[in-house]
Length: 385
Image 1 (cartoon, helix red, strand yellow):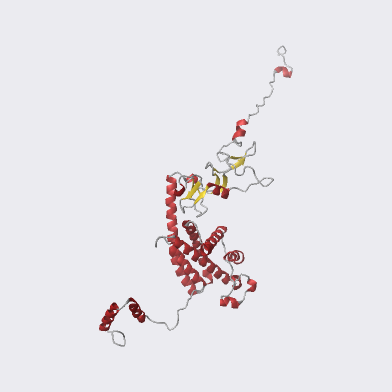
Image 2 (image 1 turned 30 degrees about the horizontal axis):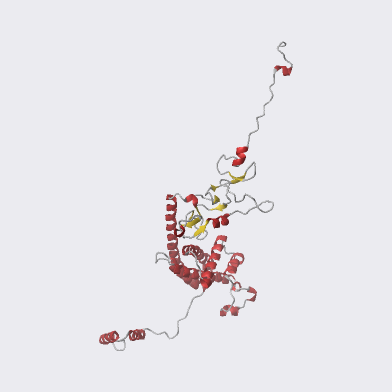
């Protein structure tokens, strides 16, 4: 190159030798001197939707098992960034509906506070309420519960430190991530400019690919676990895990650290474990009677233990059932005994409407027979015949 265009070959060689002979800081300074310098500082440019997509991209990077092993630290930052995405994207949708809705108190809203970003903005919980009741965004109760749990996880991680099973937190985060991608597609895209829609659509393609990797990993694990439970004949004692909400919690299976102790259940998906008594309380039905309590609401009709749960999801059953946490009996239908009123299992076809004790003590009444009628009852005698 010419002198005006840059260093000559000899100059490059000499410079290379000098750099090689010099110290590391000298080499770094020489390299920095060759970098182009901007006339103005770089600007942050993250409007709400782009900001939310960037947070979600970080979530996918942390949770994508195809990229690298997901560690507890990855789950931590996935939760923090996912909650940030929720707040940003929900406020973007409220802003599209009406700018005052992003204020904690819309009655105190001012354009200056909005433009200066000095407003007290709406909390995530209130944002969900406004989206459902004012904007009309379809957010199911299950999705709202998942968003609430995410907020709780984030607050604990941010302020107090969260001690919880990483797999369970990861499963909940994946559910919210799935919801948010649909939310962007259906609730935010219509309000964006053509250029913003193009940029957002491109970002969503990458996010869907990452989400597909996450879901594929979950699906593969679930298929493997389902096969193991089937082979071990444990499907009828595998119920919903309260931590990860997968039907992979095996009763009477203690974790390795408590292998010699009974009364535990362990999740094959997230490895959380629970005492059986905790599970009983979760699925005990609401008791009732004239005083507000049914005396036999939680009594198993088979083993008579006070351990009968209701609406329990069990892997072997297509619908939630009554389940005894003492004898592991599945009961699909209960009805009161015709004799004493206690609840009995009437699932089996042709089952009697009596409990065991009532059936054992029941004696059929003698069959009524009409009195015998002879010819004499009608005035006939042998002589007259």
